[in-house]
Length: 114
Image (tube, rainbow, N blue to C red; front, side):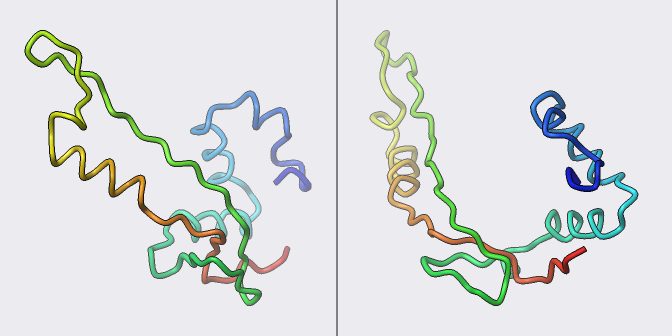
């Protein structure tokens, strides 16, 4: 969109995410509009995740960060972490922290060049 003049780099810093999405969805370029629609409707079956790239599809290396909240709660007039009070919350947090992140991600559909 930037190359074709539909959006500027400054727009990406100044517009809200919602406004950028509207620009993409309402773009007069049918290729851009349809590629974004494919991206937004991608199901798990269409998303490629692996520690190795697949050169047959659009695939890129990603470095994900795991972020979570272990809130303080008032328990018996003391501030305690929810993980320390709830076995369910503790298991959920541990499962999340132990979840494997893949090095590469891609989409199993064509983004034909414009």
